[in-house]
Image (cartoon, rainbow, N blue to C red; front, side):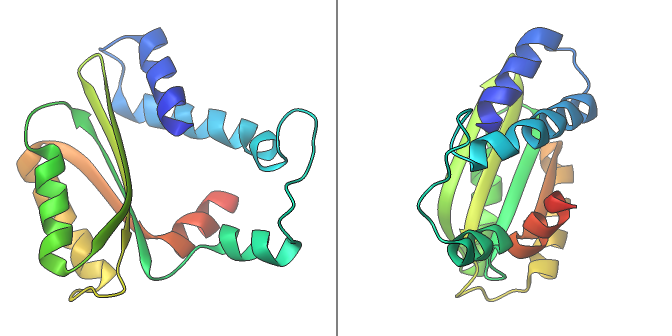
Length: 151
């Protein structure tokens, strides 16, 4: 869903669009449609998940890391980010990336259960790698990510 929104925003604003503007627009659009998506669509039908299951899912996990990458597309971005995860002993649970008019966006959900480094140490490694690659890399534990986006 986020990738479709990102693609649409870049499609409308063009390749010269400011990355921060695009990120904010995508966040705003997603927050606006999130209640509809979570309620099962425009009809407002709830999924069969119990309130406890929804709460656990929404809270996220401290053992998962959300890694977001934004920048101008060029070879080596996926390799650079995934190598840091591999070196730390993290497994990629889910990965999605897109390129829209030369702009690169990627989100990785990583399992840190076997990680040999803390989330803080990984964040620092991502910051350094982002500078080297010329992209912005954000990393946050899933539980904190979800809590921040509910506020």
